[in-house]
Image (cartoon, rainbow, N blue to C red; front, side, top):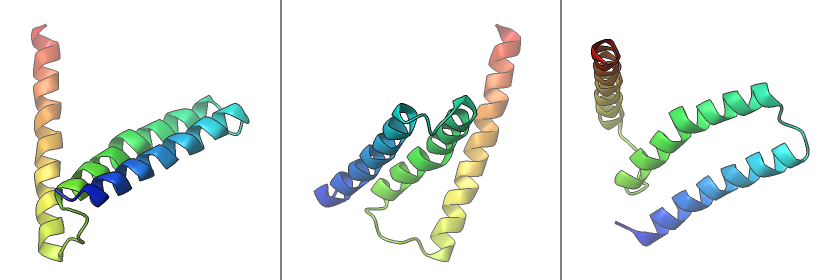
Length: 90
């Protein structure tokens, strides 16, 4: 794995955290914005960083992007079903 890719991804994550910290300190973000921002970060930002780091920062071809989206969708559906079953059992 290329170290510059890791440094770039961690820099992006650090900048996102700094924006959130400054926004909270200056009362730009209220509770509603915090919920939406954290959802965007957790559901889009972090998975995007993980996929990008695995891909070594090179752009996806159309076929690769489709394959990743299909696998991710199957995984999300599967984990949702498993979590429902676990909640019902426990």
